[in-house]
Length: 118
Image (tube, rainbow, N blue to C red; front, top):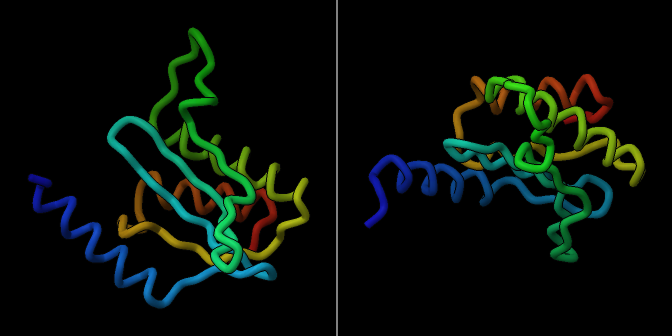
């Protein structure tokens, strides 16, 4: 059985997703935060395609210790760069039911600094 905390997050996410959808002109930026890693992807919901994705499990530099917050910022910078290559400038932010604080906020700020608008 899932923990009550996870069920509450899923309920929040469903509520957000009922209002937030991405299309070709303004795709959805989906965020997922596990205890260990941070993932983000840009999705075109009309076509059902993931256009760009990034996660800090890929960015792991051997021998270099980073905090989760620093890794979340690195995911944001990486995803913003990949989005620029695909000529994506505007997105709809989907925080996935997570609070807009800590790692989610760090990721969002890094994406904004990288040139994405939301």
